[in-house]
Image 1: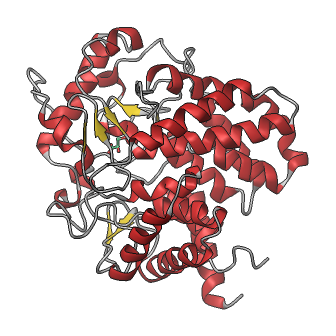
Image 2: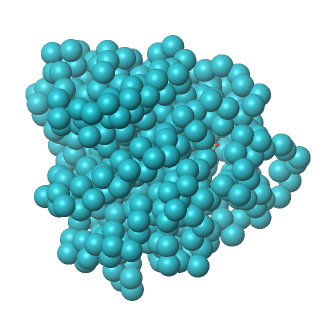
Length: 422
Ligand code: DGY
């Protein structure tokens, strides 16, 4: 392996180690000072390349925050940090879970990375897996019980649940919310990164209004489900949960555990994925469940179909076009959309984490050439511009937080030329 690759691999490890707060990893200092759910799962995947015990520890500290109803929170507030808003007092979840946390979840990528970590060393992994399987199952069951539409798609009740906070997929549903009486508040994110890269104030007013509603209702899912003001069926969650359930079923059956219930979840979610197919655009879109309409946006989440085993020829044609006309695919929003904004968070930038999931799915389904194109261009981005949160898909300019854990993890476990070369 050449010197430059060794240096980048080394730098990626340093990013993960630098964000390690002692058993758990923060996404990046300043902007995200706590343990985030899917960030942690990616970090564990990255750690598994050079320290498998630390990888299991990351997963275990994440699951330590699981609520009694199975929900695995999207943020664990392990120590108070006034530099982040909205913090624990705004969420008001005290006494519900074992660790101070937010009241919503995030894309359940953990089962898939747990499988990858376990497959690296089944001897070390076996006991970890045995204790984790019931916890993963309880989390997935919570999704199936509280977040699945009658068509079988997974919907979000807050944009942060999707992980794609300000995607245009939520614009229609967000505009139906009137964020009354939220009071004065001070954002912190815009003091860490340029406001032009972050969600707008109109978005934040609504994010906060939804958090305040959950707080008022004690985060009780039955109460929150009544007159739910925001519910959008999301391709990220639907594809990711289907894939996660397939991996959970695989691990369970290997350990001799029953899989009937999980298999049934997979059938439901397969129907849900089909419901996301927009009859007009033919690709997979979010659906605003309040209006019943597909959003019409082609996003990077649309291309997660292979990750869930649901890809087809029309999606492959669309993917090939995207690869042809975008220097650094996959943009989080089609660059021909009037809403495209190359550096504003989920409204255009290319995200190494989504690229890795899409690439894994394509490889699994035999589309090695397309997977390799995405991988090599993601590699080029990171080698040239560092371990940023995301990048402009046209210019490659880095955006958001720097020294980002999940970008370092994606480098180590997927994008680096040293992957597969050892
Ligand atoms: C943030 O604070 O921007 C996070 O994405 C919310 O989870």
